[in-house]
Image (cartoon, rainbow, N blue to C red; front, top):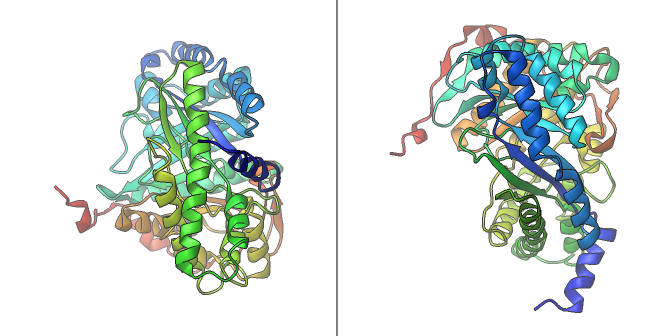
Length: 451
């Protein structure tokens, strides 16, 4: 039974500890929009998105007002557009412009799915879409893009990895006048989930229903606030507090998702129970780790503390929702986390430490800003390293790296909003070019043979 203490606790979480629902994301299948004529296909895409999502923002705002729960973003994910390109041919950027137009029409923050799934090789439409990503992200405002280049079952498509190194660099170059924002909307995955509600990596997988509502929760500030009440507890006590707090946060996500599903007449999919930080002070995953006892995120012990946090979040959250999915864990996007930004500025948090941390948390090297003259082969090798961690550990990993065109180590990029600002981090420039140019496929690991 709900009592006054529970109500006041929730009010405090929202007003003082930055508790929010980070996103409600409507996934829409566009497979029925395939057409050999690209103009007709784009019109079908626009009509379908605007028909399904016309009330998404309004319903989100109604739930906010009625329940007092902040819902920061309302978003859309769609079928990987490479599948439509395979059917119609033509310039894939036409689809990107259509997605952008539809996003503006319904008022969402982002639309994801300008994507290709090439973990085992390139099918029709894949190369065309991938090569068009720089132009697509330069010519649109709300479109996000992702490419899955590996999985535990298939290994890593190194031909795709090499191409993506060049695509990331070109995307940054074409948006250099906007602080290279295009690269901040491009994610390269290994083991990409089909039901992820978070941008920039969201797409509506081919195994998903016709339309679905997925919810992404947040709440690093709530977890940190809970830990301040246990200054002398041991790490078992810390894990227990995080589990209980994650349960409360996820129940809120379950409530919002169920209510949005009912009002929109669309099935409820999953709650992604990730701790997603923001650049605001008090809403940082890094600060949770520091509350555990680290002097600063990035020092020795950081990976162990993050492993504890990620595990406890999952254990607490999974009991609070009928369907948990997406990425689910703790995010460590450098430019989007006040504590990570501070640690990167002082040099305590380096790229190599971040890579180690990604072995035990959600996603991977996220919102990393590197020098603008970093060679494409080095970026490709960073992607390959991160994909290898995901492949071998049967987990999702990803890279969202932004070459800061015209800037060097120590300078900063300013994105604004939830994307924050990022210091240009040093990158090992010793060349992996010959390794990347070999191409082919890194075979799937032995643990993929589970049948």
